[in-house]
Amino acid sequence: MCLGIPGEVVELYPDRPDLAKVDVSGVRRAINIGLLEGEEVGPGDWVLIHVGFALSKIDEEEAAAALSFLEGIGQAYDDELAALAESRID
Amino acid sequence: MRFVDEFRDAETARALAARIASLCEPGRHYKFMEVCGGHTHTIYKHGLEDYLPEAVALVHGPGCPVCVIPMGRLDDAIAIAERPDVIMTTFGDMMRVPGGRGSFFDSKANGADIRMVYSPLDSLKIARQNPDRQVVFMAIGFETTAPSTAMTVLRAKAEGIENFSIFCNHVTIIPAIKAILDSPDLRLDGFLGPGHVSTVIGCRPYEFIPALHGKPLVCAGFEPLDILASVAMLLEQLAQGRAEVENQYTRVVPWNGNPKALQVINEVMELRPYFEWRGLGFISHSALKVRDSYAAYDAEARFPVPGVRVADPKACQCGEVLKGVIKPWECKVFGTACTPETPIGTCMVSSEGACAAYYNFGRFTRERVRVAIGP
Image: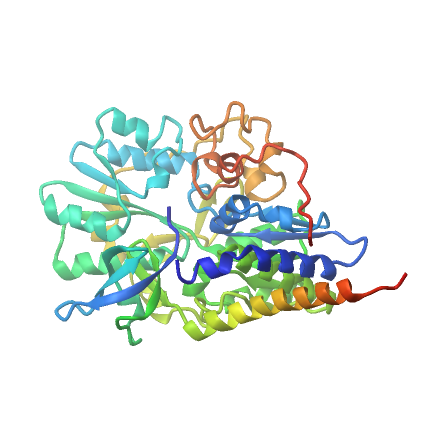
């Protein structure tokens, strides 16, 4: 199926600048990074992989921001619940 | 798995469910369309509808590029595949899609050389390894996949490979969304925008939706929390009387898309004047074909194809499912005559199809099980 999945760049190929070796849950394969032309791609970077091509770099800052937003909701919920538990109106 | 597991946390999902419930105006019902087959898949696989209040309904749209290929077009592909000099290569989910006379799988069983590939680059490799055969790649998918096909054609040209061509059935998402909005059958309150198409086209192309139709769109990621967060963002907009394009999937989707990807699509392909979509009929400027300058890589230029229009079987209601007018289980043949093993229509065959998603994740109950929100 044509899913886009995140993978970590582990190695570059000096003689093939359009390829990179990625690790996706332990599976290591070469993929084409030609669509990321103009961007710096190196080991440690995460990319979105789709049918053998990297479509986009995964922005770690944005991922962290999204997660903390989600965690914030979680925390807000827990706080709300804790506050409700403290309430005795009857 | 990094960038995956964190976005599946169950506690946070419950918190999001509570937030969604609190954003719903009492007495109001909401209908959001998710366009992307990948979203349909995630929603059913993780039972996300159980995290939504009764007031919020998710409707599946025509975001499955396999599902929208009409039967006649598949017959054309099979005609090419059955030529003795051809090795047909295709993504796995096309193998069982039924045309008028059977599927790729049936043709393969009858001796046609049809091989499953993960990437168009795998197909190109087969061409390199089999210089005496004609290798054809069945190119399907929205703008997510078109750049990869285009890059492969450019690679074939750079290497001087002459026995490789593509049968181009790439479709574009905006005309499909326009067709939905112009359809009188549906009244939607907003859209969950396709996440991976947007890595290529960016978020701007959706701006006509709030501008012309007054409805919000949130570009959504594919993990359960992404989808729930996006539903919350849609409800927030509606509660505040706003209608805008917002990007929830910021870690992957750049607002302006991928310029290189757009450039390679434009180099190798151009829009067809019109194309037939299963269920939606003929839509103008909604699909891609290979440009004349790359005709050497165009299977339609190289091989004769029947080009016959085949009507869907009478029992098939794929069209209505693709437009979100009916749910999979409302189709008369769902689960009985039409199952993944014996599919009548494409919605049941493709792993991104709404019917397959619904069937495979065991959702036979008509009632939605309410998830207790809270301890």
